[in-house]
Amino acid sequence: MNSRAAAVAELETLIGHQFHDRALLERALTHASVGDGARAVRHYERLEFLGDRVLNLMAAERLMAMDTEAREGELSRLLASLVNFHACARVARQVGLPQALRLSASASKIGARDSEAVLGDACEALIAALYIDGGIEVARAFFDRFWSEEFHDLGAVRNRDPKTQLQEWAQGQGLPLPAYKVIAREGPDHAPAFTVEVSVQGFDSETAQGRSKQEAEKAAALVMLLKREGVS
Image 1 (cartoon, rainbow, N blue to C red):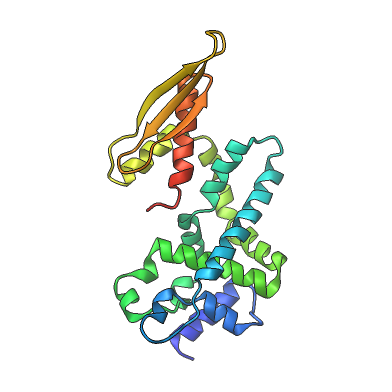
Image 2: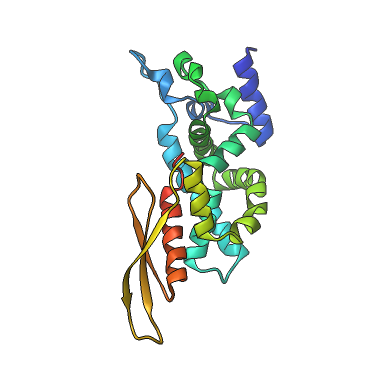
């Protein structure tokens, strides 16, 4: 058994599912770079599309069950912290996906095997393959087991201010701090409604409303965070 075959076998052991459709598993582990050139190779991009939807569904179901009173905005923020390529890449490393992936020599040379984006995509493809091969319960068992730590960290996410999160994100990209501007104030003095625009250099600005300037700034920051989720 070669090293990659051993890695694939170890992957199946770690996730607790032996694939009936071996071709499906192989497809889920094949990066698009393998098809470069004259060969036509089925890779995981279409599976990634399905896996993202399956993952979102399972995370949304669990969030709603955990907190029956949470509003849509809060649920969306928590969902974004659970379903993103960083979380998927962490899970990918837990199950040994880097060693099991099929990549071209050129992709491996430039570090694709350790890329957060590549590993995140491959993890979503694996979820789709589990869903197709074993059904939703098999996919959910994988999700429940390997997303447990992500759910454990939700408390910290809930307690962080969106403006602080957006500032940290911008700094992480090497960008200037976000800028906020009130672009409208409507309603009577006793019940005003503020519209605030937030801008980050290099990205489209976003707007949101609130009953105070601070509330509107937080809402705008949250919109920007949700739209920027997945940008490295």
